[in-house]
Each structure stands twice: as structure tokens, then as C-alpha cells.
Length: 299
Image 1 (cartoon, rainbow, N blue to C red):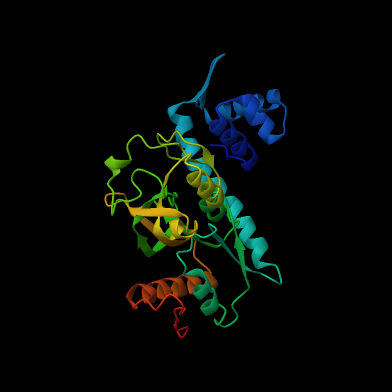
Image 2 (cartoon, rainbow, N blue to C red):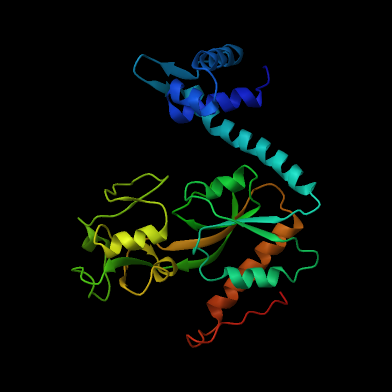
């Protein structure tokens, strides 16, 4: 069978994701007839139909579904290999860490402080991606390691280790009907307006679309929505909002994640330090609020 070219695969994946030739062509910055011709040639060479086309819709065939799933993985690996090679060849190579702002569970300052004591440790470049992008930064080689939250973020095709598991809390304005409750269950929140996170499936949420925690905090304070968040996220929203534990909500797990390819020794060191700092935090008694915790770095 003829080999797939990365250009052909990129074209097919764009159509498969958009399910619209016009939008895919615009995204790829090529003419729509040229894109249609490239897909027909790909189907001819493979000997299977990948897409069902009509005047109203485009859909994937069973063969197209397979190529969509496995082709995305293959293209990500090709891109990752090229970017890893470029990174390794730079004289000032860095360890690229992707994290959600405020989404490190309070661990990142100590992880970085300990990591910097590693022999020959490269500088850490901290990247901030959108909620739908952070894991993809690892998959396609734009980042080396990440702190991600499951099940909120998809870590398929990534290696990971658990750092912390957090209870989820409802974030409410102080005058809300549930604000004085000691705890809640999911049934108590039925009928409440929940936000839609930009880049993620709505999952039944009908509230305003939000892109970051600052925006969310203002919308909650105005009574436009409530939110159910990991406790560490909720604590960063400021003192004017109320946090009430949701006892049956699925916990949020903070993981350190990296691509499935053999990690570099610098990634291995970062993962080792992150898990050790997290374990130390979990087992140590909490200090007074005005005393910062101390973490040993002889890990």
C-alpha cells in the first residue's frame, strides 16, 4: 500500500474535524477544489471511501473513523519528533512546562525550587494553554511535561502520575439560597446555571461561556452562574465568594503528565521531584496560615 504523506494526513484530519470542506480549506489556507481533489486522490490510493458527502453534510465512513483516530496520533508523533529534535539542538534548550494558571495545587513553586537544584537542570519555560489545548501541547511536542486535571482534561495517549486528589466545591455568591449550607450533593444543584468552558463540550451547561477563573469569579459574584471547582481553584477566586463542598461530585485529580515516548532525564527528574513534593505535602501537618511550608530538596 502506498505510504501516507503528512500533508495528505493533515488535509484529511482538517476535513474530519470540521466536517465541512469550506471551513477545512479556510483553516488550511488552500482552495476548496484543491482540498477536495487531494481527498479524492487519497481515497483512490487507499482503495476505500473515507468520507460520505452530500449537498448538506459530510460524515466519516468506518474507514474514515479509523484513519481519523490513528492518523491524529501519527501526525502528532511526527510533529513531536521534529519539535523534540529542534529543542534538543538548541544551545539554550529549556524544559517546557504547561500548566493552567492557578491550577498547580500550590505545588509548583516548591517543585521548581527543588528542580533548579538538579545537576545541569535546564531553565523551565512555563506555558499557559487553553483548557482544550494543554494536553495537545504534550502530544505534538510543543511541551515536555504538564500539570493537568482529570477527568476535566483528557490525558489519553499520555503517561501520568497522580499528585493530589481534591474535593470539588460549589462556588456561590454570598446571598445564594445554598450559601449557608455546610455541604451539598449534586441533586441540590439541579436547575442551577453552570458555565460553559471555552473549547470543551457543554455537557448540558447552559450558562455563559468562560475562558478563565478571573472571568468566572466576576460572573459568579454577579449571580450569572455558579461553578463546581476543585478546592484549590475555588480558593483563588477571592474572599467575597462562598465555597460549599459537594460531597458526591467526582474528585479532581492533579497529575504530572508527559508524552509516551522515552522521557529525557530532565523530564524524569521533574516527574520524580513533583511526585515527591506532592507526597510530602500530603503527609506533613499543615503549618499556620502565616508560615509557608518547607519542602526538602534532597530528593
